Length: 123
Image (cartoon, one colour):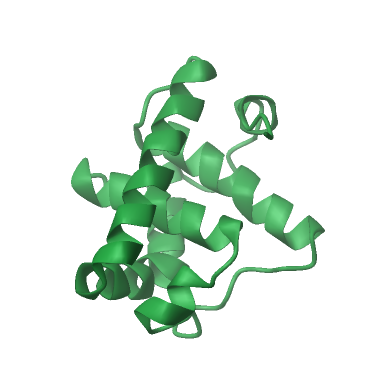
């Protein structure tokens, strides 16, 4: 199991947290959440990812506010790029529930970040 607490604890804010969350929503959140609300299995998987995000933030002494979620998302995005799996540009994310169910860990975890941000009224 990977410890996500260390990588995002010291991430510098390149742009405001809210703007970064908006970007993640445009890149993966809108399409991922739309698919999830039509596919119960995907929504269940995202709920599990969201719980893990909250646990990771808590373990790092952070809360699920805009700054904490943006730092976590930045860490995930940087890791995806390092693995050769850059995030899709807005409008190029998977569309169907089946495509999202087959999506890699970083994309699903980022959609979970968007789910938390939306639920908490941060977007």
